[in-house]
Image (cartoon, rainbow, N blue to C red):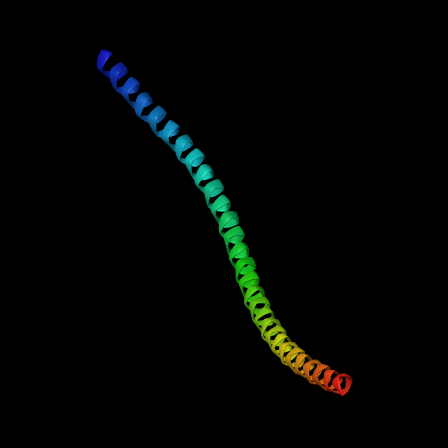
Length: 105
């Protein structure tokens, strides 16, 4: 009878261990599923951030091109203004010389 009791106890311990392990496995599987869901959400957020960054980069490139065009136009306008000022200064000098000549006579 003692041997039968030992076998029964061992069988119970084994059954209890299997039962506990199956409970742990289902809990672990639940945690793994939750982690997979979190990873999927983080991955989606990362993809969205990448898309937003790419769009911002494209917009930045367009803005740089527009700014470069505006700078070129401004440089051309400044060059034209400088040329006009030089012409105006030369004309004023000619007029001053003509006026001085007419006054000296």
